[in-house]
Image 1 (cartoon, helix red, strand yellow):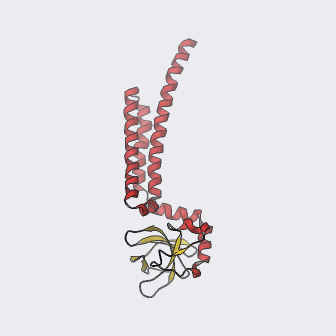
Image 2 (tube, helix red, strand yellow):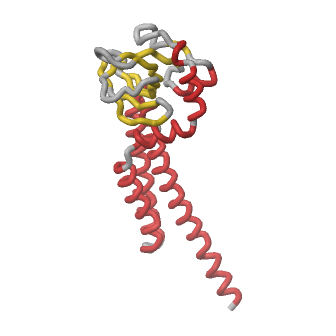
Image 3 (cartoon, one colour):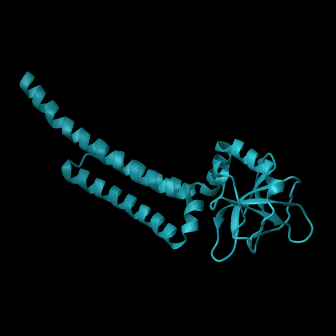
Length: 213
């Protein structure tokens, strides 16, 4: 009896490890896709390469999910094992498509680096460079991560309105930008000049900071 029990146990354990391995692989693959979408604003600065990288991430995740299902089906056709792969393989892409990744990134990044944004606001009056001045004025090294190019530019309303500074996160090709903007006065629904393209406030983040796109 003990030999039979031992034999059964040794036969089950490798199968369990294989199932867990495939499940982890599928979850990691879709997690990487979610990460690519989370940092989509940063990847947009890479233009075509960013799109290719995101597309490659989807292709790999779909392939890993498909290979896992085929491998488990051939191994034992166990419905519970297949379900462990199928559930994240289906729910993950649905969730990735449904989430507003721009909002997630903008708000979470601001909360995470709120102290740095306050420090940048204290330097707002010192920023005089505009879009044409090589994408603006260089920020101190400890604040450079707030902007895609480590720079800040002074922006103004199209017409009369408040002026402020923009920390561009996404820079368009050839024109346009989106990023964090600081205004001493409430900007309201004013249209601003963001690198030769009009932009408006999309979200108010607090402490005089807004997201423009």
